[in-house]
Amino acid sequence: MPERILYEFDGFRLDPLRRSLRHGRESRSLTPKAFELLLVFVQNPGVILSKGELIKLVWSEAIVSDNNFNVTLNAARKALGESGGEHRYIIKVSDGYRFVADVRIVPIGTDPQSSSAARSFDRWHLLHIVVSSMLYAALYGSAVFLEVAYEFDRYRRSAFILAPIVLGWILFTSIAALVIDRKRIFRTKRNGLSIAILIFFIAGGVVFVGLTRFLPNLPITQMAFPAYPAQAAFLKDVAYFLVLALLFLIIPFHFVTAMEHEMEDGHGRSVLDTLMARKLAVPPSGTIYLRFGHLALVLMMFAVISIAMTAHLLDNLQPGIYRNLFTQLVYLRGILYFGLGIQCLAWYYSALVDLKRDCTSRIGDGRD
Image (cartoon, rainbow, N blue to C red):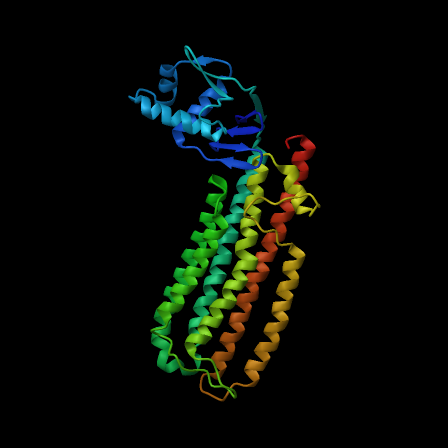
């Protein structure tokens, strides 16, 4: 299996495989052609390359105008921090251009075992995405039935039509949000967490707005004290679901994926420092490190509050034909809610352990 090659010079690291350029921990954006042009320079340090040779290497046989060439060259220079009058790396000479930085080739060895582990880790990510999204979507589907359970004979038909639609919509958008977040981390490292959160909130909002035509703005559940209207009760459910997803699914998934990307960029020491909560450790920009123990305590607190609220709710239910159905749906919602929390915690703990183990292995092997 071929080695992965990185090129380093003056604090920059260029990765041909991932088509990325970094300066320290900062990612520098490049257009595809600007990246290819810079790669040609970096692969030929000190060599004078004529304009015609550069065009042939980057654009093949295509006809390239002087303006197009200059725009691409300036984009590569801008990524290196060069200004219009200061060219530190790409120097124009009489016969063409020369890259004058001292370039160091850094081979990153790969072997079948480590590649298999990486693929396994990706499958573990995918399984977590699907399972957690299914549990999250099932919460919305069960809530549709729960909020009309006391008049199930009246709303049964509509509920059986709408619940699968709601479940499918939430399942699709949740998977899409997490996949988009992961892709943005590995491509641009920008706004992945914000986009994922936005998708989750918009998806929940769309469900609520769509169900206002189905759920009446008056109480359905019969209780000893004034009950919420069905619309308000469902909105309260959505708020609870989003809080759980934010704390236990979205933020931890984003953090683990960002740490994985940092590992592949050769920052194993900084990742380990972050995971060990060392004083000088700084997590990557845009990430939030929620400690596993803290999340476990939060879930336990949610459980205590939920048990108390559920007992209060069930103790104050009025007799009705579908009271037993309502009670069963309340318990089902609790099982799904805390099942999702426990599943996310289990994945998070395993992922953090794998990251620490991989960091230690890389540092011991001298790869970071």
